[in-house]
Length: 426
Image 1 (spheres, rainbow, N blue to C red):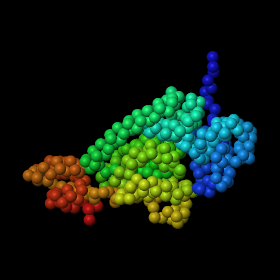
Image 2: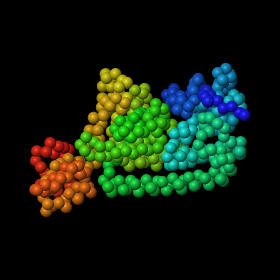
Image 3: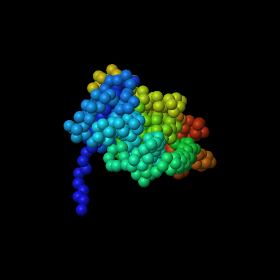
Image 4: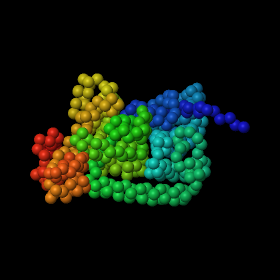
């Protein structure tokens, strides 16, 4: 009988990058290391080779490939991860030379997405992205290419779906697109319902591992998975957030962004990102403690621009400020909202900024509505937020949060001297 070890062997990975000068290779390699950790492997070594262009046959040069082969033997490497999207021939040639399994950056990210996806939509999106990526790589490989082993880069659709011909995969992709289309229709219906009901939405977007889920939990006690890993959250989460002034907004947590995100995933997750783009207020959250903070902010700004978010207020919020010196914050990031989602520092300023950017100015009032005009109370219930209602001898005593249009109708009933009565409307 085969014995199964209680402890799985951790995959030892060698990271390889060809620096052609097209982007910051070291920053990309550092990010790749975090991605490998998020996938559950151990990044043992990293190698960088400067070339004018990548080698079409082997990605790296012949000499570097020999060095990689020797390192794999000495360090007992199980997996080589290339910081690029490789062609099938490059993967085959590298594997033949090193006798070690090779995956590329795209496969790694797809694998992490498959590992993290929880909702039906997330799983469908991951599967579609994986099939889009694998379909051209099945050419000339047949079953050999589609048969999956265990470990990183093999999670997702599963071998029964991948051990098929190209026609079957295309049929599966069309089915996935149809299912995602139905989910998108449902999302649009929910969005229209929120708009009809006057629900104000506020989306948290930003680079992966910026602390979006931690902020979500701090503000709403949402219980969202918050880990120091890239792509800890994939499925969008919505929770109600009550602002200090009494107005409630719908807070939406979104999938994190990453530099050089595979286009397969940009397409597959565009509908999820568009959910953020349709929000009334957008929070661009950034890890202030990262050396790449400004680059991360720019990545997010570029994506928001591509989604057409120019007409919506975007609050730039720097998280993890408890990890930085105050003088550094004042020097480099003074213009932005500074918080620590972990300690709660700066949260009051963030909530105030959200209130200041509400699409409709709101006012908290106390009213004494005569019985002859009691119908206005029903209008407050439907279009405002009714906090308290009490029938008295003089009429209906009402405490509520209402917009400026409704306030114009009821201002004659306002109880003067109410302590919260001067909020917001000027």
